Amino acid sequence: MKALAIRHVLAEHLGMVERSLRNLGFKVEYLDTAKGETLKEPLEEYSLLVVLGGYMGAYEENLYPFLSYEFRLMEQALKLNIPILGICLGAQMLAKVLRARVFKGDKGKEIGWMDVFKVGEHELFQEFPNTLKVFQWHGDTFELPKGAVRVYASEKYENQAFVYGKAVGLQFHIEVD
Image (tube, rainbow, N blue to C red):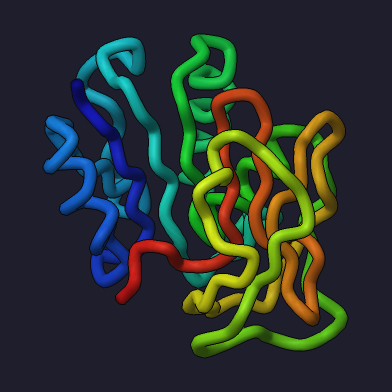
């Protein structure tokens, strides 16, 4: 099993998620698209696609052309039924690929350790607590994609975690301890 992690900033890597993936038997590979890297193997070779965070907005393709390439990879993963985990920017990108609007949040930034609250049910989150303390670092938000299940919300922004098929979007940084 191989996991592909798209990294936008070297400091924003898989963190604790990488340790968990390796413990589950995954081989982890990074793709640094912001540095011009593209896939060397077909996407079908991967069992999981993780799209990590970054300082850019999911709506800034004109400033960061590599985002267009990533959107195409995410669309292909959805068509191939490859599970996707989007973290922060990755969640916003997933929402955009699913035709939801991504925009600057009008309630200010969320930065620091904050609580998110379970507002929906999904089998992937059945063992998760009703309140989760997570690390936030974002100013953008998104509308819930049509057909997605909202699982967590915060006091400021209602879309903190969602599931769409085999894709999960987390507005917060689950990889940080």
